[in-house]
Length: 396
Image 1 (cartoon, rainbow, N blue to C red):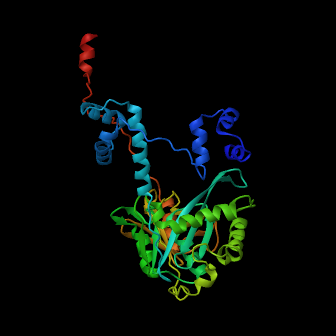
Image 2: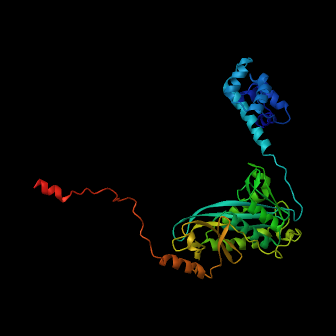
Image 3: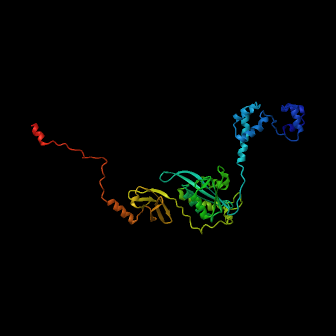
């Protein structure tokens, strides 16, 4: 622009050269061009060019390092440096990572799928100063993007199933299938489901599915929902305890998360939820999870379970038994033998005992104790030597 302005002012080429300090050819070329030409780095050849096809094939097949590839290419005539190889390998690695992250967005029909995952929310301290880890359970419906979340201090199977039941009740039904990652509560290994979780899925009539290992973006809807939960709800807020955290979370779900205009569907999740046509949940009796616990019978013939004590026959004192709750009954057994059945204790700290157990314990405790035999011997079976009286008379 400066050169053209000087030309418009009537200066000659020679004068413009003097004023600008540029060469005559440069001034002529710029004045001849109608628009500025951007600078372009001239293309230069590389010593690696003849070997790039070979290096690419070897790297994709075996993932060899630059040092290994340097040895192989030098044998073929390469005379460049290892840094040139490394710069070229970085481009190959970037392409490979981009290909691995390529994902097709998968949209599901109404009522077809939900996605579930846990999110670790951080360590905290309870009122007693003890460390406490907090987790978030998140379920999102694939069609409507309706969201449910709650916060717990455990991720065990019992907690997972209870969170599912709360989500079914909150969302108004059960989808046909639910997608998980490979958590142990759902799948014990790549070839075996958790039998208790599978029983829960069959009870409510949904099909559990798991995503491919090390590919969490397969369940990208719930991954995005977890990020939304942490940034839009948790960030910058303070809660007195877990109860307040869950109460504010429920308010956030009702007033913010499920009534916002979703960026992908361009609709509010609460509006699309009516089109999900989920399987009914309220008509099904709540699932009862039975997980046996192991206890040792104490010297008084009792076992402790859920802060209460239950009696067993006293001859089983000191043995390890399994105890579990079914509906409102407590079942105690040793291997395949059922030792006792009790009603659930009316309150924590109760002692539930059957009269026959107490009578048998009283009888065993009042029996006379037999003195134990010593673990050594005293034998009187050797002969005693006696001297006749006549012998003493003869001596005298």
